[in-house]
Length: 225
Ligand SMILES: [Fe+2]
Ligand SMILES: [Fe+2]
Image (cartoon, rainbow, N blue to C red):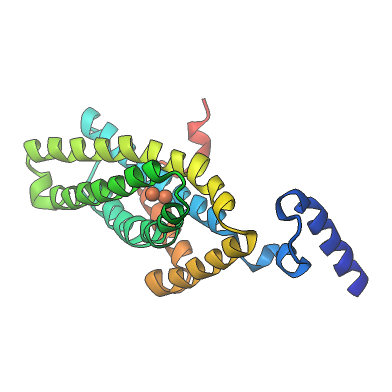
């Protein structure tokens, strides 16, 4: 048993040797069951945001084509975006990642733009919530405003999260040590409990799935061309 464990540990060390060279074994040998690293966590959260964008796009298509649609599609999604993306995911980026890049003097212009976009996103969500209220949704002019706000939201967040995934998150390891990245992951995990409650990620994901199912866009195979 002991022998097997140390073989596994050596294998993990060998796999991570390029990235973690020079670090003590206790830091390098991450138990995969024990939790994901900060960038992996943030990217997983982007997956939830992506699924919300897909719901907005489906809602927009139905607004345009007159398909079956009810205001809760927008309202429910916007509330989820507010609690999961804006009050949790983006707060973590603003609290832990952006200041670290500013302190290091790295990607500062990018960080400025990302932060301004968080603010713009919150304004749009505010509008979407107001315009998706049932009495507003009955009015054709305000449905047009709702569509404009949703389109702007999707248009901004696709490149926003893609830039974070491809540029900002990978650069985290150039300004923090592996040990600091691990500590950051733990701090964010604790915040998840505090802000979202027990199994916050899982519950948010289940909510997204329930909206997808109600819209008939849950089955992934339907998207295969
Ligand atoms: Fe962001
Ligand atoms: Fe993000």
